[in-house]
Image 1: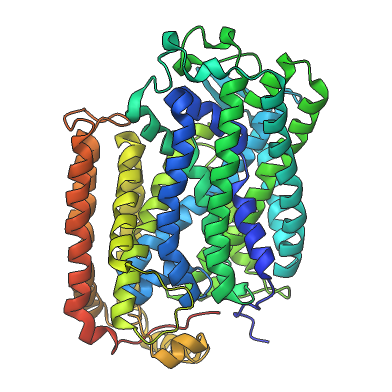
Image 2: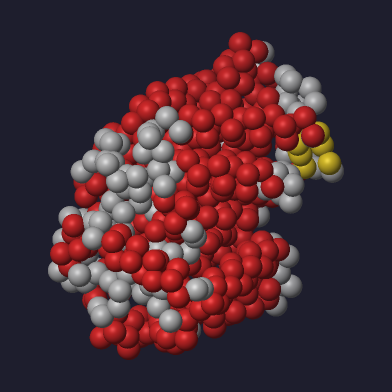
Length: 569
C-alpha cells in the first residue's frame, strides 16, 4: 500500500456525523450568552441569518466537493483554479484557523470545568483566561486527541459517531427543560430593556462573528478536509455540508430562544450588554442552578467535557489533512505526506499540536479567539465561489453529481457574504488577520527562493518525485487532464504566471482593510456609517469577483498546459 495515500473508510453517515459533531462544540455552551449580550432577544435572528448565509456559501463547496473529492479540498480547489499563490494564501489561512480550533474548544471545556475544579481558569477584567495549571491540562487533553486520531480513520469515524450521538442529547434536553420550567416571553418585548432589538440591526450582525454564531457554523468545513477518506463522496459531501448547517440553525436558534426566555428580570437590570449572573463561566449551568436543578447541572458539566472535546477531536483530524494538502501541492516538505501504519498523517498531527499550544497565549479567552478564527476561515472561503466559476470554464467535462443552478448569481452572493462576514468581525480582528497573511506571504517567497537555490541534483530528484506522484492522482481529475502550477517551475516563470492570475487579490485585500478601518465594527473609526457600508462592500465584491474571473479568462489557454504535483484521493 502506498504510504502517502489515504484509504476511503469513512461512510456517508460517518461524514455527516463529523460535520454535525464539529458544529456542536463549545458554541452551544457560550454562544447564546455572548450573542444575547451583543444583540439582545434579536440574537435569535442572528442564528437564522447566519445559518442562511452559510448555506449559500456551503452550496458552492458542495459542488466543488462532489466534483473533486480530495483530501484538504479547500487548499486544492484554489490550486486547480488559480495556481500556487492563491492556493497558498488560502491554505495558510485555513491552516492557521484550523489549528486554533482545538485550543478554543479545549478552552471552552476548561472554562466550564473551572466551576468544579479550582485553579484551571481565572478572571482578568471581564475575560476568563487559563492559569498555568489550565494550560498544562489543555496540553494534555489536546495530546489525547492526537493519540486517538493516530488509531486511524475508521476508528475516528466510529468513535466520533458515538461522541456526536451523546453530544446531541444534552443540548436538546436543556432547551426542553428551560422552555418548560419558567419561560418569560416578556423578555423578548420589554420596552424598558430596548424591546426585541435593543442594539438594532448593527447588533444582530455584530453577533454573527463576535457572538460565536458563525464560529459554530464553520464546523461543517471539516467535511471538505475529510473528503479524501470518504466512501461515495459525490453523495456524502453535499449531504453532510448542507444538513449539518441546517441542523445547526434549528438547534442553536431554539437554544437561543430557550436561553433568552429563561432569564429572570433580575439578571437584566443593567441591560443586555451587561448580562451576568453567578456562574457565568457556564451560562446554562448558572440558570439551571438558580432553578434548583443541580442534578441537571452535573449533566451539563459532563457534556461540557464531551461537546468541546468531540469538536476538537474532529478538527485534529481535519487540520492534519490541511497540512497534508499543503505538502501535496509543494508548500510544505514531502515529510508531511508520510502516513502511519494506520494510514494517518501522524507527523502533521504532531506539528499541528505544538503549533496549537502557542495559541493559548496570545488569545487566552474563548471569545477573543473566536473572532480571529472566523476571519481567517472566511478569508479562505472566498476562493470557493471564484474557483466554482473558474473550474466550470476551464474543466467543463468533469462530472458534477451536485450541480448548482443559477451558478453565477449564487457564487457572487457567496463571495459577497464572505466579505460582509470579514467586515463585521471589525478592524481589530481584520488587521491581525492581515498580519498573519503577510507572514504567510513572506514564507511563500522564501520558499520560491529556496527552489531557485537548490542543488541541481536535488531539484532533479524532486522533479522525478513530482512526476511519480502525478500518476497517483484521482482518476476523475486525471482523465480530465487537470494540471495546476507547480512550485518546481523556475521561480521567475512562476512569479510571472502567478502575478497574471493573482494580482487581483492585493487590491481586493487592501480595499477590505480600508473599509474595515473606516467602518463601525470592532474598532473602526465610524467614517463609513452602518447601511452605506453594505453598498461599499458590494462594490468591492463585484470588482474583485470580476477581476478574479477576468484573470482566469486571460490565462485560460495557459492553465491547461501547466504541470502539477499529484492530487491525493
